[in-house]
Length: 124
Image 1 (cartoon, helix red, strand yellow):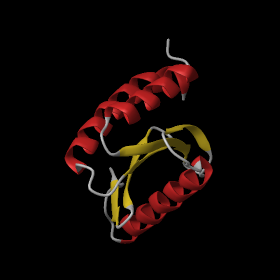
Image 2 (tube, rainbow, N blue to C red):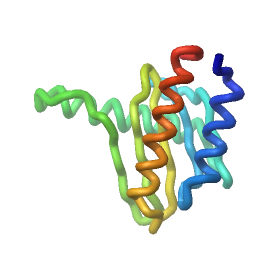
Image 3 (tube, rainbow, N blue to C red):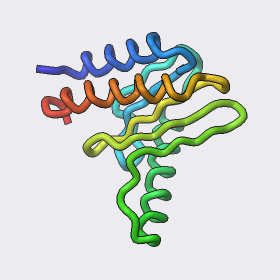
């Protein structure tokens, strides 16, 4: 049976194993931080609120366009990249440095999502 500590440990391992990733946050759909890990100064509450807002906005755009729910959102900026994924009733946000190999970040993120979905049955 998975515990909250297992989730925190899995997030920490993800950041350490994924070159270019500096932080990860698991947030509620209304923008509250559920769990996070970062190797540098990182405000999880700001990131949680941001990914919640971005996902909500894209969901509204999808509804207006009569499209399906977003499966992931990838935002590429000069200072780095932000990847957002829904997982059950939560959102996963991944912050990567500029120049990070996006393909590897996404492959490792999908592994993380798979593991979190297994844990989700026990936790959320």
